[in-house]
Image (cartoon, rainbow, N blue to C red):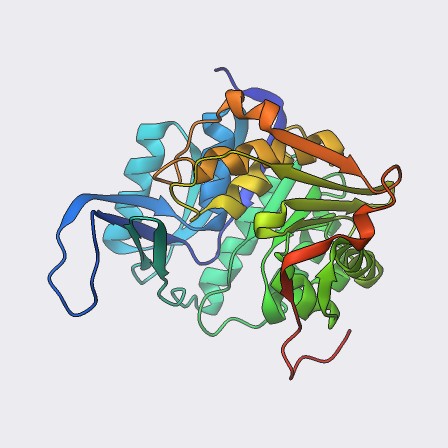
Length: 334
C-alpha cells in the first residue's frame, strides 16, 4: 500500500527496547522449558505505533535514542522494513524486554529504560522539534529513561508547540510523567483504566465514572482522552461527546502491544472522532489475534466491533466495569 504523505505521524520513544519474544508449548517455574519460537524486534511504545501505521500505509517516522549494537540492530530492522526513522546516538545499548508466550497467557519482563545524559536529551529534543515542522501529529510514547525528570514530556510539548503550532500532540505515558505533563495541553492522552484512576484520583467502577474521570482529565489539560478498558473495550471522550467501542469474538493470541495498536489505529485517519475510535478497536483486535507486535490489520474483524454513543444510550453510564480500578492510596486527587 502506498503511503499517504499528506498525513504524517512522528513517534518519539525516549526508552526504546529490543523485544525478545519466546513462545513455549508449556511452562513451569523452576523447570527446563524449551522454546518453540524466538524472535527479536526493535520495539518500545512509539516504535510499535510507527510500525503499525507504516504497515497500514500511513506515513510515519520513529525517533529513538540508541547506541552500540542495539542502534545497528534497530537501523537494520527499520531500513529493511522501509520505516522512516531517526536514531539519536547515545553512549549505551538500549534495554531488552522479554515476552514469554505460553498457552492461554503472555508474561512480560521489562528492563528499565537506558539513561540519557543532558547532551543526549538535547539531541533528542532538537530532532523532535525539527520533525514536528513537517508532521501532522507527534506521538510521545512510553515510560521515561532511568533518571529522567518526570516533567520531560511536558517541556517537550511546550517546545514543540512553540516551533510547530499546527501539529497535534498525543501523549501515551503513565504515573508521574503523565501527572506532570497533562497540564502542558496534549491534544490526546491514552491511559488505561488504572492510569486514568491514578491521574484523576478517582475510583472507576462504571462507564459513567470513566467518562467523568476523562472529563476531569480534560479539565487538567488534555484535549481528548482515549481510555483503554481491557475487556470492557475503549472509550473516547472529547469536547464533542463520549463513545465506547467494543469487539466480540476476537481470538486472543498475544495481548502485548494491544494498547500501542489502539493508539496507532486511532491516529491513522487524523480525525480524533468516533470513527477513529472504531478504527482503533479494529487495530487493537487485530493485534491481540497476532503472535507478535507486527500485526496485519484484519478487516474481517470490522463487523465484530460496535461503537455506542453516550448521548443516545442513557444506560451506558450505569454499566459496571468488569475490572474496576482505584487510585493508589498515596496518590492525591489532582
